[in-house]
Length: 74
Image (tube, rainbow, N blue to C red; front, side):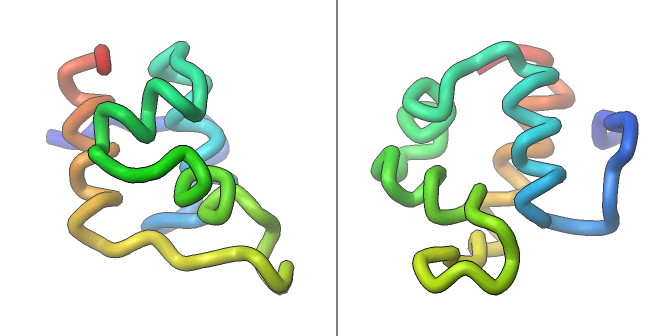
């Protein structure tokens, strides 16, 4: 059902989000528009774990990213 990414970690991680953006071939801004969130949210989700400005992505939004991967386009 969900797309498989090379070097994929379990669940949402900054690495998985970066891999998803690469696989979709979109910019952070395009992904934020497709998800209905501010571009800053995507930047915060991509920050390395332990970084002060890093934020966790809601599970519902991660499921939307996985759906975009299944469709193959934003």
